[in-house]
Length: 599
Image (cartoon, rainbow, N blue to C red; front, side):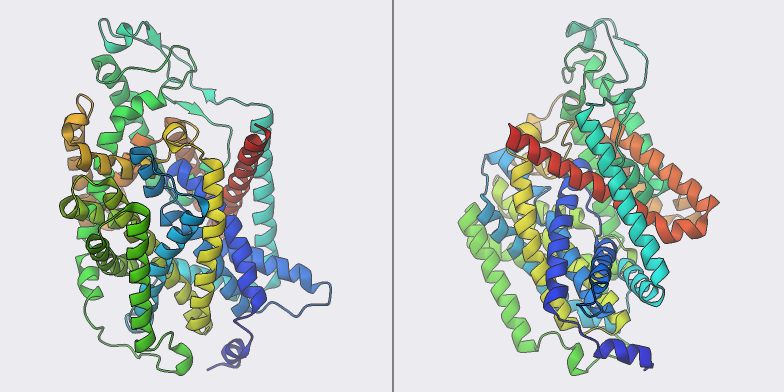
């Protein structure tokens, strides 16, 4: 062991300031993921952002001469707590919880939401504790995000200049994005519509609605005065960006007009700039969701090796048997499993009137699926939260048919636990690289989840007063809510409740999702990169076209920068995009709160 590594191990780790820093930063970042989740259905990994913010804050405090340096292991503990807090949106706030309200009218209060989301996170944390040795030490899975965070921490603590550059870029990007958002709000800037007029088909549904023509702007083809969606595009890369643009062209440029003309769904109100998003979504939702679900489950099926590996003892590798590397003894691990299972079952029964036996089966299924999700995340850096939730929804359609609460909230436990478990495994990977003790990281993860529950649930209740009226709209497209709600309603109401042509659309969308998922998994990588992403295609069906256009443009700029200045792009693009996302989402939350207070 090198002197540098030994010095890190001997440096302070579990300190009050490290945990509190992570809780505060994570509480704020949880609002960012809540905002982006309700906009595009995605949450962002916040480990790197949190590490830089915490490092920068304590570097400034150190200039006073009254505090000791904030060590690398304290920064690691800070990012562990913060990333846990930021992941709270996946505990149900941007999918099953609002979907349940929209279907049944049930709305949890702040205290109930905090208790529920925190309990979901605890299930994932306990599973992660049990998996650490197998996946990190024995199988040595990559966990790319954890490796990226670890390498960044090693770099900024070795070269202060690199840390300063990243901090200035992160802060500057956030300020620019906030300024753009505030300007858009104050000046009431409108989207720049793509010009043109489309004549209604004689005798079609549009003409029957009293409209002789409509415009591309009605269908959402416009440029939005925002920075967040362009930044999201920079992160997702060219393949996904192009797939989003292709999906928008197919969905909103072809299928939506056809649905309006055929009379399957009525168009929106007259006006050259009036949005027909809500009208089009009534039909496009079904093929889009079918494509996303079938693609996610097909991709999951191709991970059968990871699934099998998850249920067998590992071979090879040297386990770390030092006392400092033991997170929980076998006795206390069993106690923890029992406690989180009992808590989850009790809350499902009290809050949602789910049968205790059904709830217990759901938690046991969650343990297995969270384990699989963690392994897939370790190999691919993608946590299949949606796919895990859909597996549980399908299972409970059989176990508890016609019960939307059981269908949604049992799957909520699965998806949220999978997300929190995978987040902890990436943090464990970072800690393992730095020589950190895992037990303090678990404590930080639990504290972070609690802070995220406090802040995230408050943010959700403030932003979304009435999910039925506010979600699945231009302002809050909430594609994840649409997906979960659609699956639950399908199992509850049956196919007869769907609009005309939707069944055929679902069949075609499902087949397309399966075929594309098979192609991207079986073709050589060079050819697979040219296959459109089926989940991205499906997502473009359920969000406004201008969101897809923005992400496409951001992805193209990212691609050009990667070719033009590859070194700068690999070092700073993620930081720049993260700053833009954080700046707009936080200013957007602040403006929404001000509107509510002013109203």
